Length: 97
Image (tube, rainbow, N blue to C red):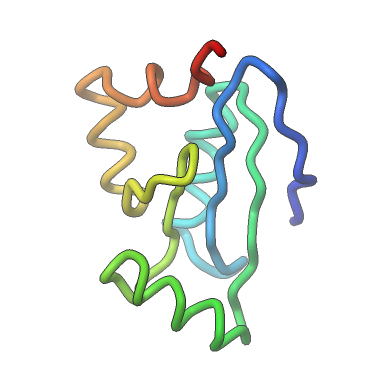
């Protein structure tokens, strides 16, 4: 499944680096989708250059890796924990200019 890169003006740009066969990736995409935000899904299966960049950028070699407005927030368990604490929704609203 590929998610088209569309970002509505009232939500933050969300990018999820993932692989199709990963249940945590599917859970992260489902959680973010339930929030009504558009997500750019980047499939990194068989893409060693992007995987190497992710490891360098995040310090993690696992997927998913969730970026909101250019900031890394970790994987599914990280954003699920943020959701339980009420910290995810404020990040998904684009800042007003």
